Length: 424
Image 1 (tube, rainbow, N blue to C red):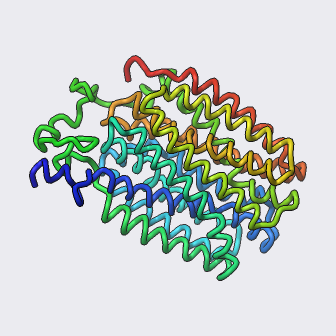
Image 2: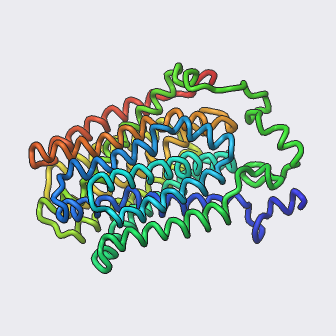
């Protein structure tokens, strides 16, 4: 195959866009089943088994911790074996775990399967997927990451009502068996096996579709965009010695706390204040529509505007939305909250990989994102459990949502002050 042929890809289209479709399938079906569907499972399981919301939320929290805390190891694994292999292995485990939820009879069963889902999603999900995007795009990286994050928002749009309807039609056990089967088909067979390829250099390409010489590209793969030799060996300690990594981690954690609180408890909260289950689920879908818009806007604007300014503005919108939620029970204003929350979440989901991709060289992306990502995941996991405990203690979510506002305010500071490091 000549470089020109390779550039054309399938039907004359740069193959990187097909790779992007592959990772979008992964984030859509795995994220939709793992996180977005849990809000549907929560009240059903609590009612059937008599478990508290804090206990059930803890399963998701533990799964998210397993998804994110070992991220430095996942990053090393991705760099050594390639993201395509880790996508196949990890998503197969995640699909088995989701299907296994259908067998739950005791609370430890739920925890076991969500650990399996978390580990599988960690190996084959966010780090591997964004590494693939970072490998295939440079000039259009923020746009590609914005599209990727928008597809994550699509999971939030489709899966809550889909899972609600599915559970109502066939029962929640059969519903989770079907969700697991969808992961194996879409994320493993189509997304990972058929579409994903590790690097454009493997097809005689350069990022963004520029023709390349395969031999030259292999020689250059460990060099930065300026063509200067990369410094060998970025370590966890080396990254964390710099203020930038802590600030990026801090802004990711701030958004994750709010996102984790709302994704896990929003449906239950709206039902508590008098809305029907399908109405509560529809507000989550409405939020996801605006999340898609937020991700796409962020990806497009980040090609022209500083990512620091865009992320700061997103946190301000998030604070406005949460304030509206705390002050009203009118459905119209609930949708105003959902729009603000969706725009901010969508933008900030795209912000983390954009910050890392813009601030650190391409060949080290998997290692750096593996170091920073646990900030986000830990905060997300803790938020679900904290909100559940607050509700169990007070029979109200008011204090939990107020804490989320405080985290969003800290996010403004972290985002605005996160500047490019002088050296890695």
